[in-house]
Amino acid sequence: MPNTRSEGAMKEEDQTPTDPVQLMMAMMKEMKEEAKKREDQLMRQLQEQAQDFAAALQTNRGNAGGSTKSKKMDVPVLKCPEDINLADFRDWQQRFADYTEVQKIMEECTLSGRQSLLRSGLDPAWTKLWSTGILEIDDRKDDINDIIKKILHYIREHRNPLLDRKEFLERNQHAGESIDVYYSALKSIDESCGYDVNPTCKVCDDACGHGDELQQERLRDRLICGLKDQAIQQK
Image (cartoon, rainbow, N blue to C red; front, side, top):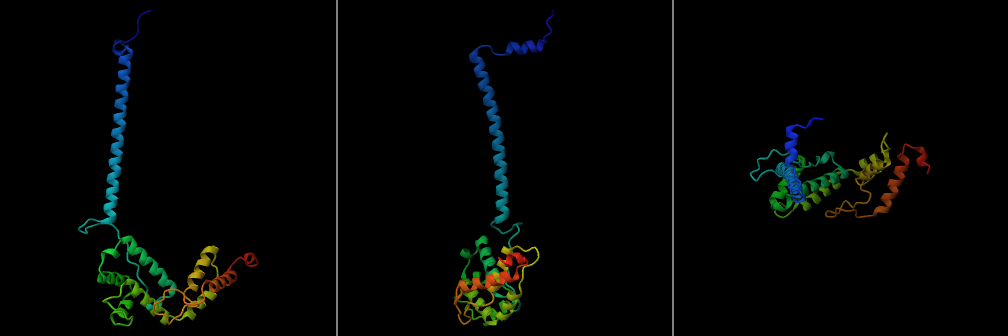
C-alpha cells in the first residue's frame, strides 16, 4: 500500500523532539509563552481599569483649576418662612448637613465662608431677615450651627402649631400606602405640632417637655384611626 502521508506532515514529525529532555523543555517553553500571553492580557485589563477609575475620579473631583464638567450637587434650599413647618426644617437641616459632608467644605472654609455657604441654602426671604437683624445673627462670631438654631427659634415663634395639629388629626392612610410609610408621615407631622416643645427656649433644639411616651400614644391612636384596613384596626 503506497505511503499517503504528505511531505509537510513527515517534516513536522521529523522536527518533533523525541528525547524526553528536549520534549520537556519544549513543553516548558510553550507553557512560558502561554503564561506571558495571559500576563500581558491581565496587565492590559488592569491598565484599562486604572484609566477608567482615574477618569471617574477626575469627573467627581474636578481639577485644581476648577474647570470641570462634573455635575455638582445643588445646595439644599430652605423654604421661605411663610411656607415652612418644623418637619420641612428638619428635612432641610439633614440634607444640608449631608451636602456639606459629601462636599467636604466645612473644614476648608473660614467663618465668613461658612456663613456664605449657609446663605446660599436659604430662600431670599431668610437672607433678608438675616441682613436686617431680625434673626439676631452676629456675623462676627455666629457659626452655622448657631445660625440654624436661631432660624429654628424663629420658625417656632411664628408658625401656628394648630395648622400642623389639624393636618395630623386629618391625616389618614392613602390608597396603596404601606403602614410603615404612613407611620413615618404621621411622625414627621407630629414633630411639627409643638406638643413637647417649649417655644420660649432660644437655644434648645430638642424637646423640652414630656418626652417620647406621649408622642408614641398620639401616633398609635392616630395610626389606628387612620388605617384603611378595618380588620387591622380591630386587632
